[in-house]
Image (cartoon, rainbow, N blue to C red; front, side):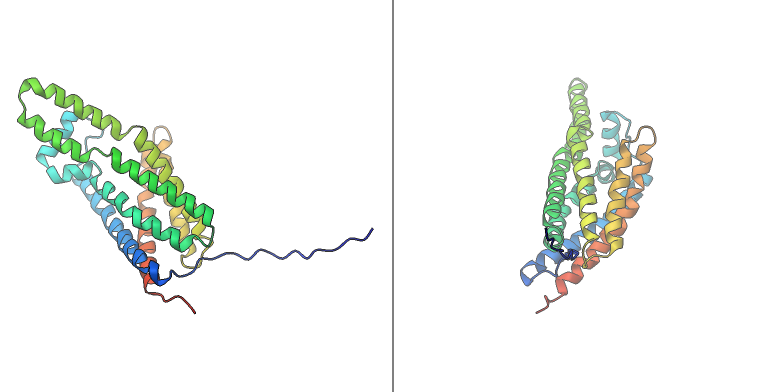
Length: 244
């Protein structure tokens, strides 16, 4: 019985291509969004250090903070992270356009997870609600304050509830998947991919008992670098003509 030898050839690594002219506006908007998000991170850290949020406090403690520092109190309630998640929408869409040729299924799953996570985070953040409740609390009489305090406690509970954790896990998953896909592409450097993986993997340290929250804080350092790298690269791609 004769056998045929089949020559095995390696499958070439698929890479993404520069966006066509129809996608360059999206890449430009996404690049700006990434750089704005990078600018938010040091502002958020500075506010946390200057006016520490009462993370283990009651709604009354948050009302007092919002009365003393109306704007900084909103930052302590992660209003800048709400803006950051809004900016993630064009960023994720642009990354899908640029990365889809490297691995379309993985890129789509990562972008979809990131978009759902962003929407969940925006929907569950209580910053504006707590600001309004604080105004009502100090304008109300003693008989009405108990009800407003209870509403504030409910808002704070939902802030760290199911929606928050679903958003956090989906966002982390999206970042890791997109980082892995970036390692297969030419438009983004390996450093960019590894920064995405490191930021989101370290962020999952939040779920380690005891000291996990302190581990997760370090993820913002890698996230800052990733935003800067991605923002600059997307702006460059928006100016790059597609080869003939």
